Length: 121
Image 1 (tube, helix red, strand yellow):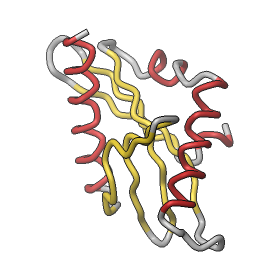
Image 2 (cartoon, one colour; image 1 turned 180 degrees about the horizontal axis):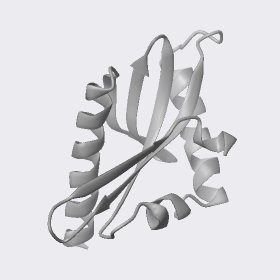
Image 3 (cartoon, one colour; image 1 turned 180 degrees about the vertical axis):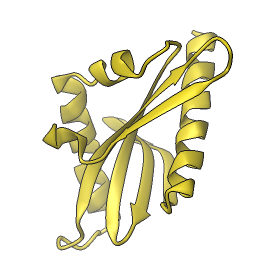
Image 4 (cartoon, helix red, strand yellow; image 1 turned 45 degrees about the vertical axis):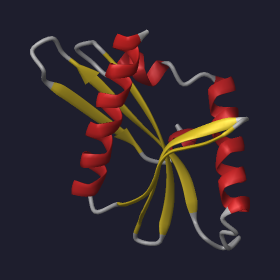
């Protein structure tokens, strides 16, 4: 379990750094409520992005992307709606759910795949 947590923490660290390099402002990390969690809430060009980070010790990002099940999608949407409500975000504010999949290879190399508006795939 500890290794899984370390892998996840490392992935979220890499994802935040990646998003900053892409011009995103990180608003929250690990925002959680009893019924859901958002790994990263970021904003760029007036669009709010709720970012799910999936990290796997693997050579490709495929397994990480495949781990977004229909029930996980629903939990992410529920958390996004709760965030919007609690922060009184204007209904006109554009937002989306992104997924960042990270593959960590044994040699330390990280491959990052960023799927914007992931629920539109």
